[in-house]
Length: 114
Image 1 (spheres, helix red, strand yellow):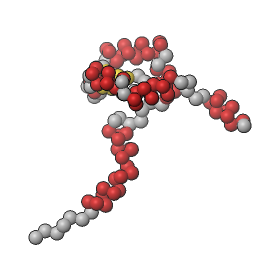
Image 2 (image 1 turned 90 degrees about the vertical axis):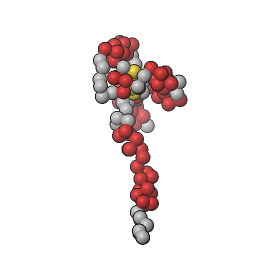
Image 3 (image 1 turned 45 degrees about the horizontal axis):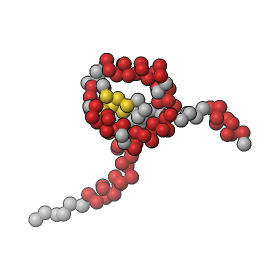
Image 4 (image 1 turned 180 degrees about the horizontal axis):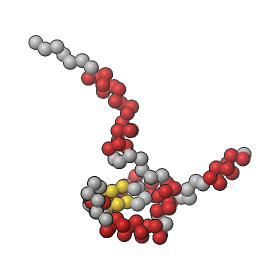
């Protein structure tokens, strides 16, 4: 006759609020900020990055690093997954945010004057 196990419920309750950091660790940490991606989307930087991704193959990245979304800073397993990502709402929101002008130090100073 065994004794019922106790403590599982407490463990589950404690994990409820920690999912954000767990997901970030699973997906490779913090994505690039909007101003960093905004610089990458400029024409000269964009072509350079696309050429580097086509030539280089990194075994540690999904799809050997060949299928990459510049605006979301994400790697994909194959082209089908990347095309599905391009149609997603998350990609469209991120692209809209990145294409707008990034905040600068000058903007912060102007807002601080009032």
